[in-house]
Image (cartoon, rainbow, N blue to C red; front, side):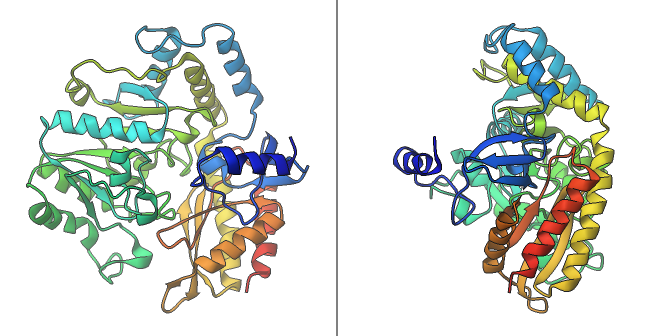
Length: 429
């Protein structure tokens, strides 16, 4: 099917709200490793991995082989019936988490994983207590998770789910209180207590947060932020949910999980995206104590599907075999150094931030005022596309470029990506 036909059918048969990142959308035909090729034969270096989902590269042969083998053995039974694939995967999840986090529930997406976590928290609290989330966060596209989301553009419906409160994000570059870390004494975290005392019933079911805020623009909290926030939440009866949908499985470098960088132990962890290298999956992991509060009949028809389990298990085994957390740290340092050099050349780069292979460039009109520049972000994305490079966009103001290549990227791949970004930036005024 040619490009014109694809775009015509796309316009005719898909929801008009389906997002296209570029002025002229790209229709891809195939992918391999770090590269995608469109229907016109144009090749792109992928530095966004389908929103951090193709964690190890397109059409990874080892992972695909395991998927095919499982499809030819047992494709689907639903969670009504135990099988080897689901118990093996659940055991693997327990092995990559600190002791105590050993009970898994498999679903199909990050939205479902986060929603399951909230249900867990509410049942654990006996149906009482509010949920605290962060401003600038993103949790999914169901009615509940849209209400958790703190970006007006992503809250499609005006429907309000009661009992959700949003605390200040630990967004040091744009501190809502006009302070500077560490002199601020983590005022954004400490303010959670006043939020609870003034905006809630005084009883908290959970605090849900991404270790690094993804859609928010790869916002990295201060190292001691979560220890303070979690202590306050637990003081008021709540549990801590770490949303690892974007940060999990080595993405942040050196550690398997993002929360491990912050010296804090969550009660619930959610995963999706890079967990199965692009195959639809999600997972909520918790402790014995929290899991046993989840009473009543519940299944997820496709959750724990044997094929999805095979894809995830093969992905995690590859991550361990290739020491991906270490690779992400090394290649992330290389990428960060390149982006820092480019920031020195362009006054409209306000900040480079991130961890491992999860890096962002925040673009501004003026470094002194920090006025967001969504126009420059759009222009740079278009110029990157012209260079044959795919990157992402985010941030509340649409002015942050998100750069997160598959984690098996080589030194040469990163160098090539930096060169393409440099050429694209040189053409942005």
